[in-house]
Length: 83
Image (cartoon, rainbow, N blue to C red; front, side, top):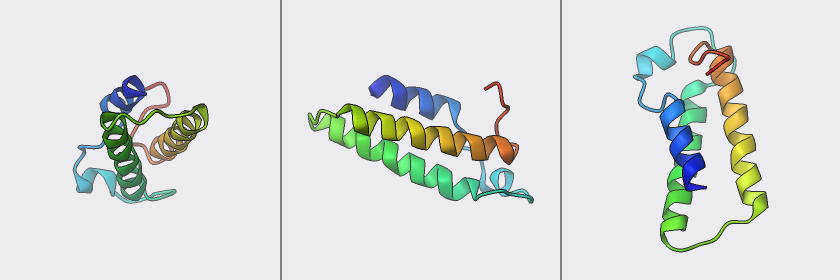
Protein backbone atom coordinates (compact mmCIF):
# COMPACT_ATOMS: atom_id res chain seq x y z
CA UNK A 1 0.00 0.00 0.00
CA UNK A 2 2.83 2.38 0.81
CA UNK A 3 4.35 1.66 -2.61
CA UNK A 4 1.03 2.40 -4.29
CA UNK A 5 0.69 5.70 -2.43
CA UNK A 6 4.26 6.67 -3.31
CA UNK A 7 3.70 5.79 -6.98
CA UNK A 8 0.46 7.79 -7.16
CA UNK A 9 2.08 10.83 -5.56
CA UNK A 10 4.98 10.62 -8.03
CA UNK A 11 2.91 10.14 -11.20
CA UNK A 12 -0.16 12.32 -10.71
CA UNK A 13 0.05 16.13 -10.96
CA UNK A 14 -0.79 17.05 -7.36
CA UNK A 15 1.60 20.02 -7.30
CA UNK A 16 0.54 21.57 -10.60
CA UNK A 17 -0.63 25.20 -10.30
CA UNK A 18 -4.37 25.88 -10.39
CA UNK A 19 -4.08 27.90 -13.62
CA UNK A 20 -2.59 24.92 -15.45
CA UNK A 21 -5.17 22.46 -14.14
CA UNK A 22 -8.18 24.67 -14.84
CA UNK A 23 -7.27 25.89 -18.28
CA UNK A 24 -10.61 25.70 -20.07
CA UNK A 25 -12.43 22.71 -21.49
CA UNK A 26 -12.91 20.09 -18.76
CA UNK A 27 -14.77 16.82 -18.69
CA UNK A 28 -14.90 16.48 -14.93
CA UNK A 29 -13.19 18.79 -12.47
CA UNK A 30 -9.53 17.78 -12.32
CA UNK A 31 -8.82 19.97 -9.27
CA UNK A 32 -11.68 18.47 -7.26
CA UNK A 33 -10.65 14.94 -8.18
CA UNK A 34 -7.00 15.55 -7.34
CA UNK A 35 -7.98 17.11 -4.00
CA UNK A 36 -10.21 14.13 -3.22
CA UNK A 37 -7.54 11.57 -4.13
CA UNK A 38 -4.88 13.47 -2.17
CA UNK A 39 -7.08 13.46 0.93
CA UNK A 40 -7.61 9.69 0.49
CA UNK A 41 -3.84 9.16 0.25
CA UNK A 42 -3.23 11.36 3.31
CA UNK A 43 -5.84 9.37 5.24
CA UNK A 44 -4.26 6.06 4.30
CA UNK A 45 -0.80 7.29 5.25
CA UNK A 46 -2.11 8.27 8.69
CA UNK A 47 -3.90 4.96 9.12
CA UNK A 48 -0.85 2.93 8.07
CA UNK A 49 1.38 4.95 10.39
CA UNK A 50 -1.02 4.14 13.24
CA UNK A 51 -0.55 0.44 12.51
CA UNK A 52 -3.85 -0.24 10.79
CA UNK A 53 -3.88 -3.12 8.36
CA UNK A 54 -5.90 -2.87 5.22
CA UNK A 55 -7.88 -5.50 3.49
CA UNK A 56 -7.99 -6.37 -0.16
CA UNK A 57 -11.24 -4.46 -0.62
CA UNK A 58 -9.70 -1.19 0.60
CA UNK A 59 -6.65 -1.70 -1.60
CA UNK A 60 -8.86 -2.44 -4.63
CA UNK A 61 -11.04 0.59 -3.92
CA UNK A 62 -8.03 2.93 -3.87
CA UNK A 63 -6.74 1.45 -7.13
CA UNK A 64 -10.16 1.88 -8.79
CA UNK A 65 -10.45 5.46 -7.56
CA UNK A 66 -6.98 6.33 -8.83
CA UNK A 67 -7.76 4.79 -12.25
CA UNK A 68 -10.93 6.87 -12.55
CA UNK A 69 -9.10 10.08 -11.60
CA UNK A 70 -6.32 9.26 -14.06
CA UNK A 71 -8.82 8.76 -16.92
CA UNK A 72 -10.33 12.21 -16.27
CA UNK A 73 -6.85 13.77 -16.15
CA UNK A 74 -6.03 12.16 -19.51
CA UNK A 75 -9.29 13.43 -21.03
CA UNK A 76 -8.52 16.92 -19.74
CA UNK A 77 -5.02 16.84 -21.18
CA UNK A 78 -3.10 16.87 -17.88
CA UNK A 79 -1.58 13.42 -18.43
CA UNK A 80 -0.56 11.54 -21.54
CA UNK A 81 -2.30 8.20 -22.12
CA UNK A 82 0.99 6.30 -21.83
CA UNK A 83 2.05 7.86 -18.49
